[in-house]
Amino acid sequence: MPSGGVHSIGYTRLKDRQSLENLRTHRRRLAVDLKARTGFDCRSSIAQLEQDIATIEAELQTLSGPIGG
Image (cartoon, rainbow, N blue to C red):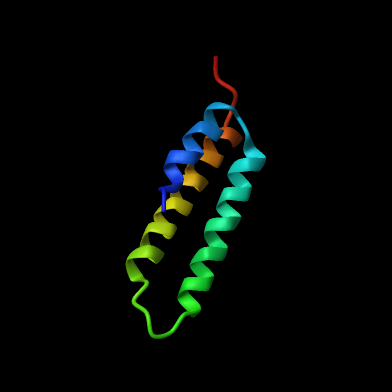
């Protein structure tokens, strides 16, 4: 699975807030689904998703910050 950072950097450059929010929502749903699974060790995938979510949230913050010149 590609890292969220790979996609989200492009969305940040395009100032595409909605796509970043959609990507974050998708990653959150995947994490919830993996956490609900039993019989499989999904810890590394969950950790990657949580890292992706943190990256996306940081990029959303840059879009929410003051407009610089």
